[in-house]
Length: 122
Image (tube, rainbow, N blue to C red; front, side, top):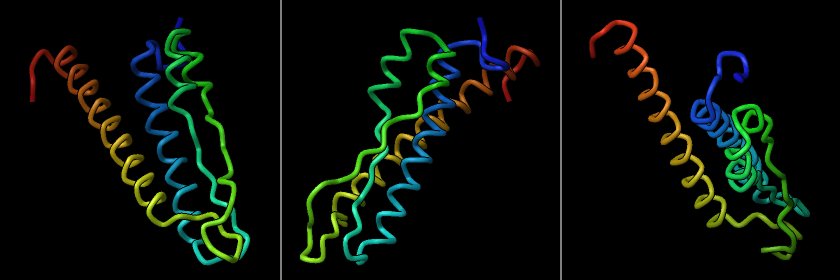
């Protein structure tokens, strides 16, 4: 059973990975923008474990994954701010790589569809 145009778990996983990694980047950039804001607590969107579990349940479950937002406790500075520039830059690089990998997988799927429908590769 499909979910709109998404009829298999692979397509759903690719699309949700792109969507959620972009959302994750928004949290990271917000954290970076508030690096010097007193009392600001960094937030992180975690979704990989939920996505892995949903893969076993089909495309509908995959498309329902929203992730979990967690606030970074403690403080890395005397002003109560919990944003670590090093951690956020590492998280950003990881999120970007995940997004780019999902885009590559999506492009491969589109190429496969073109080959099947047009009967030739470009």
